[in-house]
Every structure is written in C-alpha cells, then in structure tokens.
Amino acid sequence: MILMKEKSFDTAFVPIDFIFFGLTLSISNFNEINAERLECKKQDFNQFFTIMIIIFLAVDLGCLYFQDITTSSLLDINALKITSIFLSLTSLGFSYKLINS
Image 1 (cartoon, rainbow, N blue to C red):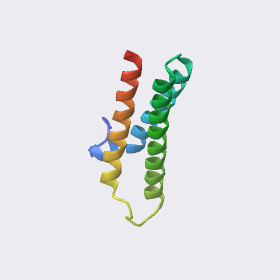
Image 2 (image 1 turned 120 degrees about the horizontal axis):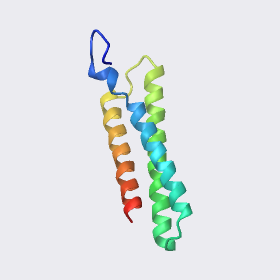
Image 3 (image 1 turned 120 degrees about the vertical axis):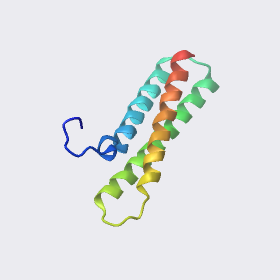
Image 4 (image 1 turned 180 degrees about the horizontal axis):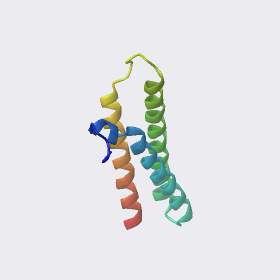
C-alpha cells in the first residue's frame, strides 16, 4: 500500500479480513467459555451468543465469496463491508466483556 503508485482506500480495506478477525475472536471466545466454570444460565447465554456471531460471520463470508466469484452485482458490496465491520466489532466487544468479567 505504501509503495503503490496509485493509492486507494479500497485496496487497503478488505472486508474478508474483518470477517476472519471476527471469526478468530469468536472461536477463541467459545473456547474460553467452555474452559471457565460459570453459572449454567450465563454459560448457555454466552455460548448461544458466540455461536450466533459465528453463524452470522460465516454467512457474511459466504456472501462475500459469492460476490467475488460472480460477475453479477446481486449483492451490495457496501452493505457487506458495513456488516463485516459491525460483526467484527461485535465480536471484539463480546471478547472484551468476557475478559473483564
């Protein structure tokens, strides 16, 4: 990016990177939840929330790959970028909550 002649923000911002960041955090969260001894209701809620984030991230990743391999503009790339940022920040916030609790 620094050495490129024509610099563009689009080449530096790749939504798939945000998705994999969120997936890595969510899988680490799930492992951390299973390792801790929490109350049953609290552990069930944390597991459910983590699994839901993983599912949404996986669906978003599938949509991004679908958009990448097709020539039609069936999906809005800007909406996919926004959802990838939102989901990765949600995963980051949930990780922060788990670490501080």
